[in-house]
Image (tube, rainbow, N blue to C red; front, side):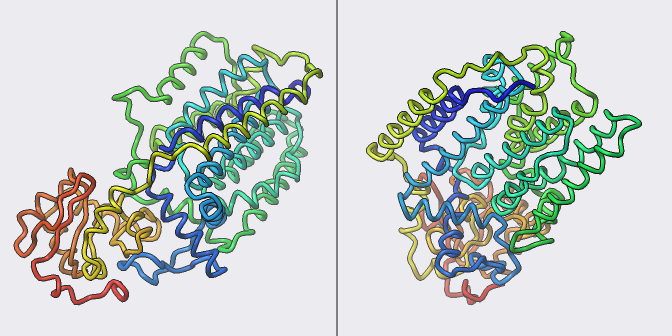
Length: 475
C-alpha cells in the first residue's frame, strides 16, 4: 500500500459527480422520497421519532419504527431550506463525497488510471440506485467504514477505533449498516487464516473492534430491535415482486453484467490473484446483487475496495506529487459552487408525483376521507397528499402475509380483491392504467370508473356511503 495520495483527482471526481447529479431531476423519481420527507417533517414537528404507524389506515397504530430517521430528518431539513433543489443538493453531495473518497482510497493501493477505471465501474453499479433516498446519504459511511477495514488489513492491524463514530451515524441513516457489522467478522477470519499459528493476536484485536462496532450500533433509538430489522426484512418471502427487490434482469444491458464479465475476463487471464477468503467475500456481494438488483450499489462500492489490494499488485501507486495538491481542490470547490448556482437558477422541470397529485385533486374530498385500495407505488404519494393509503412501501411494517395478499390483489386475483374490498370497506381505488386489477374492477358489480387519467385510474363504489369504516379508525 502506497503513501497518502494527493487529493486533487479525488476532489475533481467528487465534484464532477456532484455536478452531474444536480443536473438530473430523475433522482427525485422514486415516490418513496415523498413519504420519507413526510416522516422527517413529522419528526421535526413533534420532536419525536414515530414508533407507531401514523400514515396508513390498515396498520394505523401498529408498531413501526422509522429506522432511517436521521436520513429522513436531513431530507426534510433540505426540503424546508431549498425545496426539491435542496433535496437534490443533499443527494448530490452525498454521492460526490462518496466517489471522491472511493477514488482517494483506491489510490492508496493502485495507480491513478486503474483507480479511475475501478471507480467508474463502481459508479456504474451505483447508478440505478442513485435516488434521493436514505441509502445514498449512507454511502459516505459505507465507503469510509469499508475503506478503513481494508486499509487495516493491508497494514496487518485492527481498524482504528476512530471508525466507531461512523457506525453510530450509519445505524441511524440506513439498514445497510448491518453489512458493516458483518464485514469485520469476515476480515477477522481472513486475518486468522493468514496469521497461521500466530492467529491469537490478530483474532483478539479484530474481535475487540468487532465487539465495539456492535456496541456502537446499539446507539440508536430502537437499540436491539434495530439490529434485527435487516434480518427480518431480508427474511420476507414476498419482496421479490417489488422492483428494487427483484432479481437481476439481463434482458437489457446492465452494469452488473459488465462487472461480472470484467471480473471473469481478468480472472481467466490469470492476471488477478485474490486470496481465497477475499474472493469468497466478493462472490457473496455478486450473489446479493444477482438476487436483489438494489444490492448492485454494494458490489460497486465494497467490491472495489475488496479488490483494491490485488489490483494494486498489478499497478502499484505512483510516487505522490506534492505540487498542486491545494490548487486542484480549490478549482474543484469553485466548480462545485458554480454547479450549485446553476441548479438554483435553472428551472427544475420536474415535479415529483405531480401527475398523480393532479388526479387526486379531482377525487372529491369526501371520498378521499374513506378507505382506499391503492397501488403499491402510489402509497407514498397518498401519504404526501394527506390521504391514508391501504399500503405503501414500508413492507417491513405491513408484514409478509399482508404483502403476499396485496400481491394477489395487484395481480388480479378475484377472490383476494373482493375479500379486501369487503373486509376494509373500501370506497374507492387508484391504480396505474396498466394494472391488471383494473379489468376486474371494471366488471365488478356495484363499482364504476370515476376517473381515467394518463397517470392513474380511479374506481368508486356506486354508493360510497356503504363504506362505513373511517380511515381515521380502520385497522
